[in-house]
Image (cartoon, rainbow, N blue to C red; front, side, top):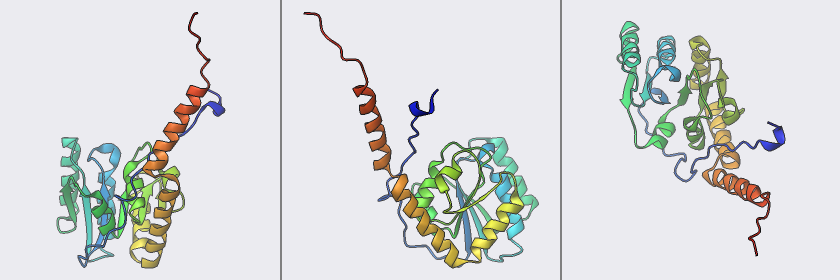
Length: 215
């Protein structure tokens, strides 16, 4: 299909719902992730990341939010937590009805996906001003731009290094979070999403041949 006949319309979020909140201070360095628990979301890799980070951060807390949709994969995750002795570090917190709170309370949001389309959760986290480390898959780069750190998929060491860098640099976390929020406000709001659909349909309707009724 000719490029001039293709229009990309990005997912959008409500920035009045997904906005930075006052943080819950737990006294621990918190890394969180949000996503259904199944292979393409890469939670097993993030457990390995936790094992790499734990010796560097005694007070580390890694929280997984999302419902298990693949029981075998979830069991594998739990076995890996036990294997690395991460019971006091890793928490599977289940689903949440307040994702904006999760994004705001984390020191770093990690997205270890192996495959993605254009990721709502990443854009939601950006809107909440989160500091983000994500795998460079699918549309993640289009969403995040230079407002977070990207690493190759299935590279726990690279993700651990990126998260470690941000955990040790408060100013950089704040800078990236502010940039991420600004990027959402410019490009990925729900209003922009709806306006783009509306203008596209209006343009298509205006190009239709005029129909005349028989006299």
